[in-house]
Length: 438
Image (cartoon, rainbow, N blue to C red; front, side, top):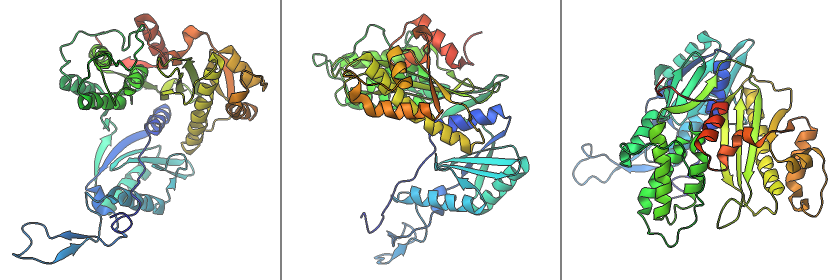
C-alpha cells in the first residue's frame, strides 16, 4: 500500500543522449572505456519501510503462522530500484565522485590530471577515464561492496552493439533489428531503399480495416527503442506512433515499409568519430502544417559533437503555427533548450565550450527574428520563444546560421525523403554500416 509499504519509487537511469555524449568525448580523447554489471543489484538496497513476506515454500512448517521481516530490498518491491540507486549513489559519493546535475546517473572523479566518469543504467555500468590505476581501484572497491562482473572493454550495452574501427566507435543494433524482422515475419521481405513514402500523408484511416492493436503497439514500441542508433527512422516512427490507440490497415502498411527499409540496412548505425575537436553544432527544421488532421507542425532537430550525432528528435508541436516562420521558430526554441542542456553536460565531461554553438536553420524569417528582436502582428504571439532564443543569442551561447535547404540534415527528421536525398544527408550525419557489402 502506498504511504505504508512504500513511498517514492522513482529512480533515474542514464539518458541515451548522455551515453552517446560520454562515448564521443571518450573516443576523441582516447580514454579507457569499460563496462561492469552488478550482481543481484536490487538486493543491496536498504529498506526504510516495515515490510513483511510469507516464509518461502520449503522453509515453512505445516500451519505456519510466522512471517519474515525484510531487512533489505527484494526484487518485486516497488521501491527496489530507487533503493538500489540511492545505495549506489551514496557509495560513489563516499569515494569522492561528484554527481552530475545535468544527468543524475553520471558521476565524475577528478584529481589533478586524473579523470574517471561512471554512468549507471540500473545495474549496467560504464566506466571511462584516462587513469587506468584509478579505474582498477574503483572496480575493486565496487566489487568489495556490491560484487560486480568486470565485462572488460565496452562492446554491448542495452542491446546496442559497439565496434571500434579506425574511424572511431560505431554504435548499431543489428541483432535487435533482425529480432524485430523475425518476430514480424518480415525476414524474407523485399527490401526498401527508404523508410517512408514521400507522397504518403497518413491520416486516421477511419474507413480502413482495424488491425490487432496489441501487435501494432508492440512493433512501434520496439521501433522507438531502435531509434537509439537509427536517426534515419525517427520521423517514420513518430508518424506511426500517432495511431497506437486505433491502428488501421494503412498504418500497418506504413510500418511494414519501415521494416522493409530495416531489412535493407540491419547493421546500419552511427559513427562517433575519433578525429576532430568536440565542437557542438545543431540543425533544426519544421514541416509547417505537416499533420493532415490536426494541422500541427513537427519539430526536428539534430546535435552533432565533433561530427558525431549525439541527440536527435522528431516531435509534433503543441499548437498550430500560423506561418512557416512561426513553426520554424518553435523548432528553434526546442533545439536551443537541448543545446543548453548538452553544453551543461559537457562541462562535467571536461569539455569547456567557450564559443557559441552554431544553430543551422533554413528559414530566413525565423533566423532574422532570432538576430533582430522585432515583433509585429504575425509573430508577436510567439514572443516567449523569441525572447528565450534571443537571450541565448545575446549571451553568446547560440549563433543562428543560415543553410541551404538541400544541405539541411534535420530535413530527414521532419519529412519522408527519396533515396538519393536520404542517403546524401545520412552520409553528412555520420551513418555507417559495417555489415554492408563492400
